[in-house]
Length: 113
Image (tube, rainbow, N blue to C red; front, side):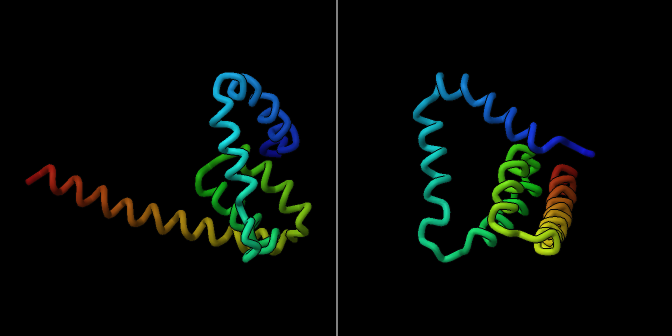
């Protein structure tokens, strides 16, 4: 097992207290942002959670993975659907690494001029 994702989510929730006490307006704004997500109803819950998990993978956010894996399970996301969405994340990350490699090559060349 790579991680205990249930514990990950519980630990993240527990760690919120000091932040909430010191920055309540930011926490409130973050919670409002999450509540507003999907409010127009154009995407169903399964689709939103598949997107959220793919983004969580590309941004390397373990707490996001835990929260959205839980929400995806509740929304009825299947293992096959999740695998397809994560395949897209993998392909996109590889594409981003390729494009940023070109940028690094260009930067290297410009410093030689």
